[in-house]
Length: 154
Image (cartoon, rainbow, N blue to C red; front, side, top):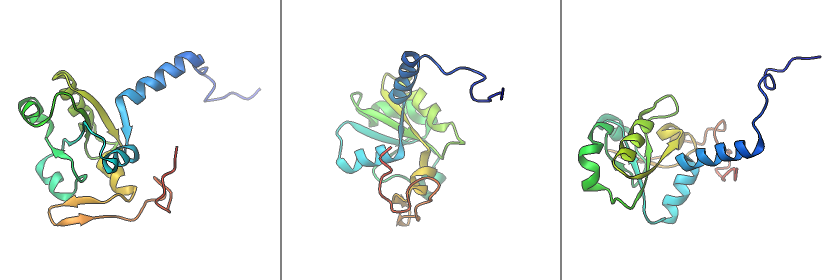
């Protein structure tokens, strides 16, 4: 009999698994979904870049609000409607800045989600981004999205 690394811990009961994955979707959004909602002009959605000034200057999601994490408690009530759903992002999956920012917003009573992949995956999926020198766009990284630029529809 062959041992299995995957099956050495049995998969969860389907009802428990469904609750787990639903829970994740209440806390997270991916860059493609965020972009689709921004393009559609979904009301009540505010995207927040929680990085420092130098990172903001280097590149940011069009329409995002720049609000470094340390300043959220002080400035969020003045800048962001309490009824908004906030989507936070930072550099990328190797950074927990978006998580820290989401926590800060949640502690202030905002509905909040974290954008998985951060600015890195926004750029890697070939979406345009703003810099202090104008709009830029990189080619699609085919390790993150279809080369065609068409949504993977996953």
